[in-house]
Length: 97
View 1 (cartoon, helix red, strand yellow):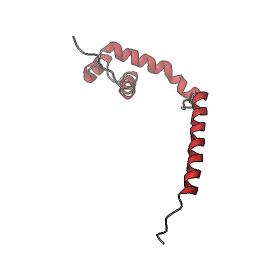
View 2: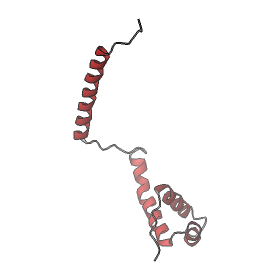
View 3: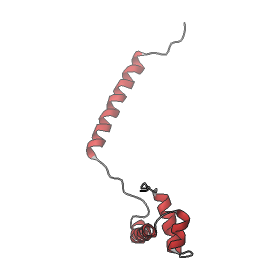
View 4: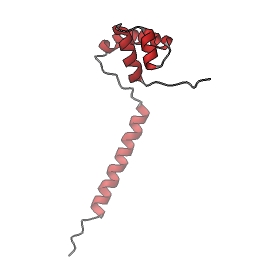
């Protein structure tokens, strides 16, 4: 029994684009890239279905902001700023005199 392989998104996109171009058959692509033709059909379908999303969002993904994380990061920034101010006042540069 063969081990499952996970392909990265770049590989899938490259193979799906070649399938969309239609210059070679799916069987030829499957043989060249070592994947099953069904996978290429699925990647091609996902590419075609998701292509309209690129133009709707202007090509940029909206960032998901977790408010709790933002609050905790702001608190940490405040703590570090206070510590930095304290240390800069307490540790005067040594002049060697």
